[in-house]
Structures are given as structure tokens and as C-alpha cells.
Image (cartoon, rainbow, N blue to C red):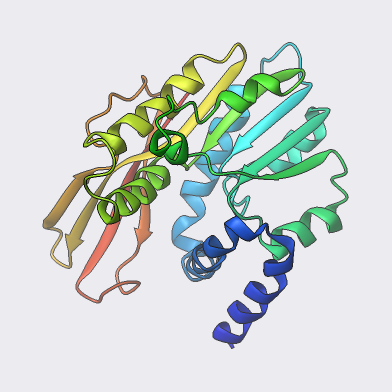
Length: 253
């Protein structure tokens, strides 16, 4: 039944997605499937992500336009409060699944706008231009709040995969440079920003021993965190009976 649901979701999302972004639909559907399977294990992470965004926006004097970068499935975004408190909410991601679009319509969020966009900056760098992946935000009118929602490490992973297939054509520090460009873009905004991102992961065996660790920011300095927590991305049994995968998450604003 799950495979049928995935196929239907892919089919429904395809005509709603720009041609250049259709190759990412399968990844979004896979995330949707895992989020459903791991809903209990992810619940605390999702609530802490929403709480961080709520806290970051709480004392804003003006709440005209909010932009959410990496809006995804909206499970980790307090969309109800954002849509209620801001005049306009703009959700930006590579793909907006048909299920997310239908849910937003059913909820009557008429002030929510969807934009498909590659936020990595890779194409600019490949073309020899200085990457400004968040430069488009300068043209958003009445911008008061920007959220980067569990996106940055995904940019790093995607850029790393693409960089490895194009070895020799791109700078050696492409991954680090584009992660840094995202952070620079956030810090350079004239409005309040909130970064929620996983910064490291660990593979832990059944006996609690760490078998593998990695820095998801590839050595790039992170901003001072106001909250930290652990996200059980792959509980025991999700990828293997022999290990689980945990990510360390920070929130900064």
C-alpha cells in the first residue's frame, strides 16, 4: 500500500512542478515516507524546530512578510502561527508535494505563497559567478522574518554529490563555500532570521558505541546556538537492525 501511495503522490506532484525540479520529486516523496514511518521518533525534533521558530518571531515589531527556506513537508514549521501572524508567508523549496499543496488549500491559508527554487547557489558558482543563493530575498517586499528550516545540511549533501560527479570542473572548496554562502546570506539580512540545522551525525551500534561521525557543515563555523537537541533521523531498524543514526541540531537567531 505504501508503494502505491508513493507512486500516486509522485504522479500528482509531477504536473505541479517545474520541469527543472521534477528530478527532485522522488527525494521529497522518500522523505514523506520516512517521516511517516518515523513520526513518533521525529516528533520531539519537529516540535523543538517549531518552538525555535516561534521564539525567534515572537517579539518582532512588524510581521508583514515571512519567508521559509526549505519548507518541505511543513512538519517542522509552525505554519499555523506564521499564516495567522504575518500578512504574507512565502514557502521556498525545490519541490512542494501535492499533499502539502492540498493541505494548505484545505486549511484556507490564502496568504501563503509557494516558490520553487534551488537554494544551493551551485549553478552560479559553476557559471563563474559569485554565489549569492539568498540574494533574491532583497527583492521580497516588506520582509520581516526569514527561516532556514533544516535545510543547510541538505544543501551540503546535495552539493557534495553533485561536486563528486563533476570533479575537476568546480573549486575544491565548493561544499564549504556554498554552506558559508548560505550562512552569510542569512547574517546579512536586514530583518530577523532563524537558522535551524543539523550540524553533525553519528552512527551508533546496538551497544551504544559510535561507529561513525561526521561534521555536516564541513568545517564551516556555525553561529552561536540558542537551542540544541538530538534528532533520531534513523531509529534502530529503519536502515539496519544493527545501528541507528542521530543528528545534532542547533537553532540560532
